[in-house]
Length: 398
Image (tube, rainbow, N blue to C red; front, side, top):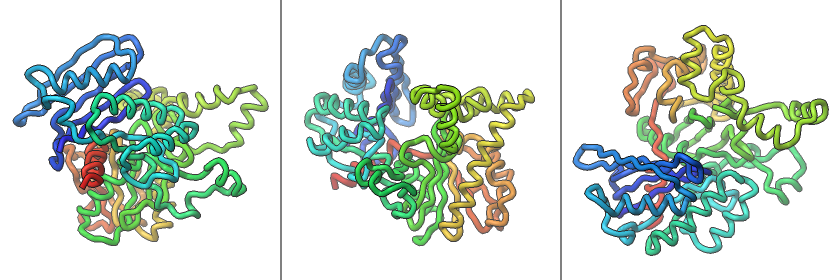
């Protein structure tokens, strides 16, 4: 069964085609700078253990035009992987916000689209683009099932004492103000892989997703029971450009005493903070380079970054009443051995003891990097959100 997975951003569109239940993609690609000068597509076909890369450039006005060009790459030329759009059985869409309505992969109907539109105000940068790509895909792949997989769905098992904020109930009832959590597809995938690794049903896992966006989730017996991102994807850990947790009094102070507008404050905490604001770059590789040159701001940025993660590990160890495993995943989690070491240092009281050799010899595949005698497993598991979306679509279609 051919399932095309679409992960759309405000000016980009990532995609992978799977012939389910095979885990390896048939092809993958990225449409970048949509609606901006310098648009381009990178397309890769996987055939007989070989990779064939195709790149093309030229202005792409909108997501609809981008998807049309993707269809041409899928169906035309010597690297075509399908004969026509009708060969696609389903299109799986990553939709960032599902509110309280959606707890799993959902077949898209007019009513589902209506609910996604109602959530525009909760995810103004993402849901409108996700919605547009659904409409374009419905036209481009007219005979395929359209399925939505929501970032928030995995966190719908969080109990009320964890998802409610300590403000009057009216704001929850009337405005939906509560913890929703994000990166759910990633946390679900790596936690399921960790459960298989542990080979036990009753598990207490802390999943740490460290990329440009960062989040950490407490997972008990395969279900999310708390997570660091809340009403939006700003709270919790320090990130590439987002501040993570910040005292709301700071916002009030800047408004009252410095005349900041809401737009300026939103830009500050979402786009000018985190690693960028403290260390000078949102890219961890740049921060590492600056650290090697003795840059004090970059050194502080790394200390803040690791410190926030350690605080959450301690908190989640408490609500889980112990830990079986912690899992590092995503770009920084998978590739930065120094950050894993900084996070795991001085946590031996929790049974977390890193093996330096195993940590520095990680080779891109799921691996255990704790000492053999440690009580808690430390796992590095590459996330695979696109496959997880395809898998959920495949299961939904039976």
